[in-house]
Length: 115
Length: 149
Image (cartoon, rainbow over all chains, first blue to last red; front, side, top):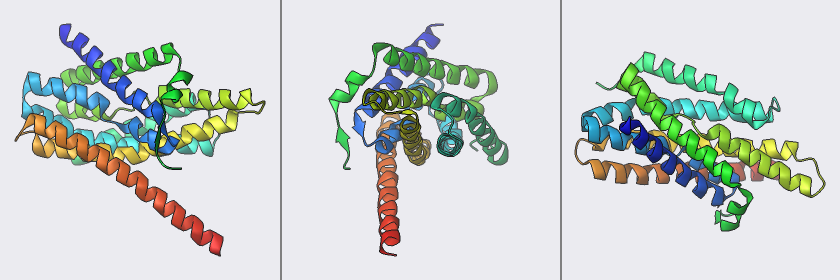
């Protein structure tokens, strides 16, 4: 239970810090870079190294590459839903989550985890 | 427009909007941990690049832009969508940096944990900013070519 509390606080703090920094930046496209900041990764990999060691964290970071590729597809899908199909932000970001799931798991199925 | 840092932009954000992002960030981190524990590290690793707070950020940007336009007596719906789309485009470029972060961490963590974190963060920032800058240059060049025609 304590582990999950630490995860929650660490994740919340790191994500909020990147989000606040992003709020202060202009133009919007540059601030958007912070939308793909490694915020969840920083909190999680730190705990993974402390709990399970470097090899475990390395294995997690390998499949994170697939997650990042899926995030690129997700962002593209959100852009299209907003500009071409004129969705508002909330439904666009929720619907596009399907794209993230499909791409991430397809890459994992295709290329597998770290050797 | 060059890159600017503005503290006044923080005044537009309500306190509960920070609370929502803290909550979503904390929940996403706990979720990534649970997935790793239940489904294995390979599946858990995917969720380190989860667009966890993206829906909150894009919705906030959209509503801030819409409010600003509506204050001026104009309909801000389209402007809000455009601002959120720009944010998403930035996140798309940032995801290249995120992949570079993960690859760097993977390569270095066996040598030095602190070094892996430090170098991976630097690589993330460098690759993300370079991707943004390159896209900006390419767009400017393509715009100039179209104008000259």
